[in-house]
Length: 88
Image (tube, rainbow, N blue to C red; front, side, top):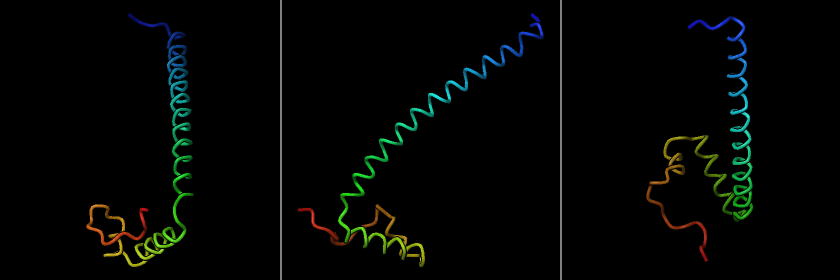
């Protein structure tokens, strides 16, 4: 079966329009999920003790500058010493 030449462009346009609508819907969902994540992150970020934040920022600076064992600060599986903050 041979399609007439005037149907092919219309078919492609419809297919492209459908793809664009799908991408727009997926983007809207992604933006909503990102906003929820950002809100939760900001809540968490605001709840961190400023002294603890300063310690973490210092550890990050050291890791970026000196690398090596200083990068262990990012290793969540490494055995840790005593806690730096109180849980009570």
